[in-house]
Length: 126
Image (cartoon, rainbow, N blue to C red; front, side, top):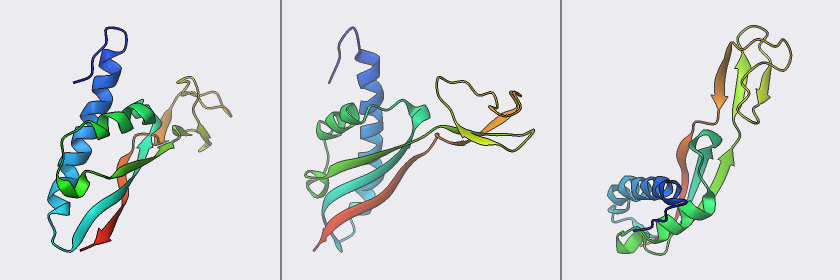
């Protein structure tokens, strides 16, 4: 298992996500019509604080079945967006400032950035 005193919790975070990807896909790839998985496409919201390179490394180190063994991850990081409940302005959030850029109110709702979705799986036919 990965660990370092400086970034140990950061690495552990991505490893947990990698393990959950495998746990989610193992029952799916048991389907006899599915061959070896080539690529797993993910959409990950910015609020998960995922570092794609660390997630990929964690995924490579996670034990998995033969059908998933050569799979590569393709990770699309989705921006954090909020919509103002007062004036309906939607904007991308930087620096965790959730106030509305138009009216200055802080009554906003998150519309994007919390996702963690397996959007597509590419595999060979049996």
